[in-house]
Length: 396
Image (cartoon, rainbow, N blue to C red):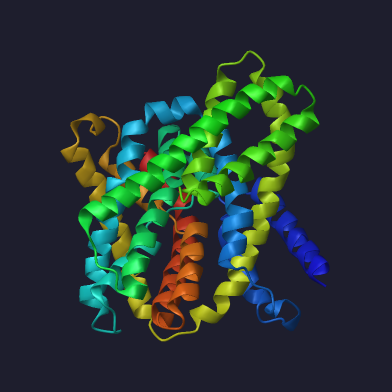
């Protein structure tokens, strides 16, 4: 039965992707998630769900590799300052400020500890560029915003996982917070994952020259995407950063070769089919899975947190421009607002919520439902609003 269900979901995904090709500002994730929520009321699909392990082991490596491999190394070099600050210091600052707000304001409605509020905020910090990047490219003449959104999302996924892991230990086993211990763990996981990914990506980029057959090159790319992810996890590095680094290194090495078009044509022939299939299944399953969590009594609080999270992200981005002189020339205030609105929550936030559910053993149900509600609001309103907002700001 599962094979038939997946086939039907893929057919729905095909329909959505066809509409997406016709309509420039079509919010693909919103459509798929809403369809998934609708399917959850049909008994035939109600039993379907997506677990944290399936997201982490099956969906994430492939999707991360595709984004990184297709991301231009030249764009990363051009925006490395902005991307680096926003995906590390900016992410941590956003989590702290949002966590403080959730603790102070949310505590009026629900029972939540300060550590629990910080953990909740860390879940909402990673961004998902799916569909947003393509819409930004179509609606603005300046490709920089789309490049920054895409680049930041790849790096901050790894940062958010590390931050979430530390706070999860404090939340579930009352582990005390030590700054140097946190920094040590953060650097070990982050640098280890990035370093391993760069090394593997470089080695495999050289191996591509030894595999002239397109089939072998595609097989090699699959090994890179999933192999480096799980190898990094084996050494307790960040598998997310390892896969992203490997994909970026592969992209950089391909840009230096004279046969770049041939190599990319071979790899794109496979990954440009796999990516929409993975995305369609994932967002439909997220819709089916999230439906049960969205039936709770604190939607007003979720709406407030959603709005405040965008405001905080804008203040962090705008403040970063003023503090770091080297970034002032790269982002205007209108661009800062567009970047804030483009920070949609998606796949990684859902994975972290499901991880919290597995670890907290029923002690964080309200946080999980609240998190799913904010993710849902983000997917719907930010995805729908990105096209008209970017067009309006582009005229100023």
